[in-house]
Image (cartoon, rainbow, N blue to C red; front, side):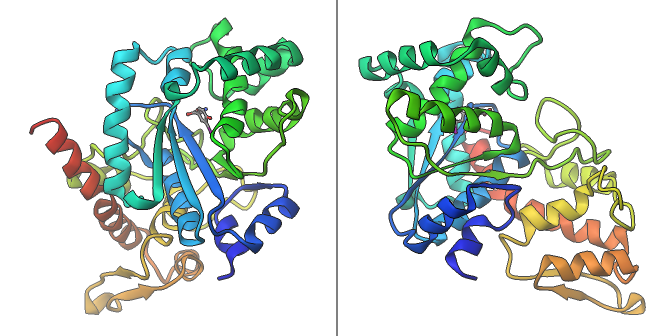
Length: 327
Ligand code: IYR
């Protein structure tokens, strides 16, 4: 796999391809980041972008994880004290999950976002950006129904983070795309360069294949789930024999294999008794998806392998959380 392919695999959008190709020519030492509002436990939504960060580390890039405490505060996620305590736990879980401690810089937003220069640049962005534009950028991020003043400050700060953390590339889920588009448009208006961005897909809800999988709605899998919880959730997952030809519903079981399992395992073994054809071994997602669609691989067997792979991925973080909580 060449550098461009590793950098862009499993993404939903690359902005722009030309800019990312240029980065991929010499990725060594380029700085890339994802920001997260600190929240209780990591779930698969967080881990999907973390998988992308690991690809970028493999390509030689330096990874910055922004623990966006001020952003979480602006989005009404709790008091500063609560948010900061959560940020510490989040860092521990990312490390347990497999982000390389020596290659990852964890930065707390408040460590630079309250500086005078940042603050003045933020005011310059406020002058440049229409209220409507900032509100639109927040459509998929804003918590609560009522837009607050804090919600329009939020995306402008997210844009400035790219400059202040001295980044060459920004990563986020598709829910971040409008903020990133605003950043690309507005950073030059205050004298800074725009940077390329990559967006990862949003995985559908495990139960229905619709909506987004997150801790706040629907069924998701998190670092807190026990092996039994995982088995139960995966067993109940929506798993039609074929993908929806119109592409309206996603296929959560296949998506989990594609975005969570194959990027982290060399091969996936589906254990089957001899009378049902014996074990199946897959080295690539496409082969597994083809077998599921042809009927060679039964959904129940696929789910069994999926649950045990996810369990292996979650286990170190689950253990770390238990230690932190003194359980
Ligand atoms: N908007 C993100 C959190 C966030 C991301 C980045 I990239 C920042 O620079 C700041 C905040 C979320 O919805 O979690």
